[in-house]
Image (cartoon, rainbow, N blue to C red):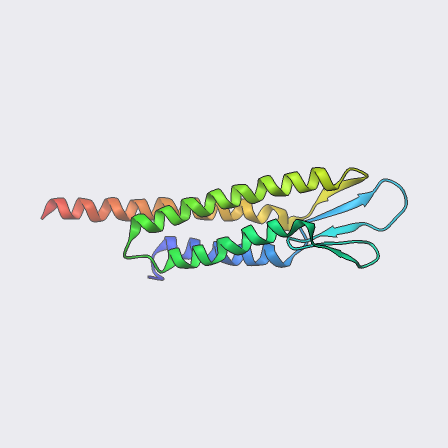
Amino acid sequence: MIQRKQTLYLLLAVIVNVVCLCLPIGKFIPEAMGVADEMFNLWIVNGDGVRDFSVWALFAILLLTCPIALAAIFMYRNRMLQARLCLFNMLLLLGWIIVYAVFSFTKGEQATFQPMFAACLPFVSIILHFLAHRGIIADERLVRSMDRIR
């Protein structure tokens, strides 16, 4: 199970998603004088330390992708379901990117939005899921070609 390259890709994708859950993903810098607000996946920390939970959808989407990727790791006997789970996670991560863009534009009306490094981690996770999907499909083709030879 662990020796398959797609398992390593999926495990790396889970690690990347967990890191993204923990780090700040953006900063709202006010146009006038003031303290910048930091945006995490679960909340926005205002300059005075108050947390605004209006961005909880980002957290929910990323939190949903982690157990799906872990389930896909252990579905190595059912490769087509494993490939579908990878595609579903890729769609969820694309949804995260869209929701992130919407929140960054709507919340930053009086402030300039500055994305942080952790905001690129879902892109990395999409690439890792794509590589895992390619590996799963290659394994399925190999198994089917071996069945034809018998």
